[in-house]
Amino acid sequence: MPKNEECRYMKSHEWAYLDGNEAAVGISDHAQKEITDIVFVEMPKVGRKVSAGEAVATVESVKAAFDIYAPLSGEICAVNPEVAKDPSIVNKEPHGQGWLFRLKSSRKEELDSLMDWKQYQEFIKTQKH
Image 1 (cartoon, rainbow, N blue to C red):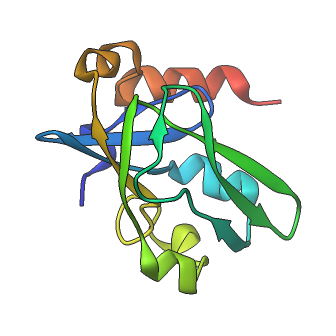
Image 2: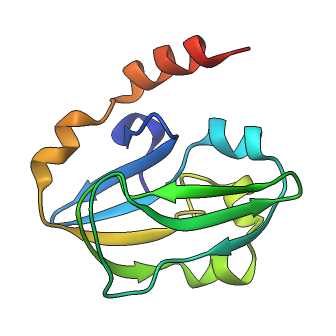
């Protein structure tokens, strides 16, 4: 699985790691810390066509439910069955075993509009309360 520095990030704290035509998608370590104890993940349906920025999944914690957005346009080609069974994996390994879904990217150029690791770190600093 990708290292933080190899991923691209959305302002809503999703990460994407493009490997060939497929992108693994999850939530950042920062996001899982903010959300705290994740108790349920509603995964998107495999085969669903999505647009970048579209809400495609939901993560529920003991605090609240949060939409997860597609960082790229494409088709959902896999969901993480381990996270579906044990959502707390996202808290333990948000960039490892805690990925949420994979999608076949139809517009790779969208990756360029996402933040790199350095930009994301700067963005997080501006979000502190």
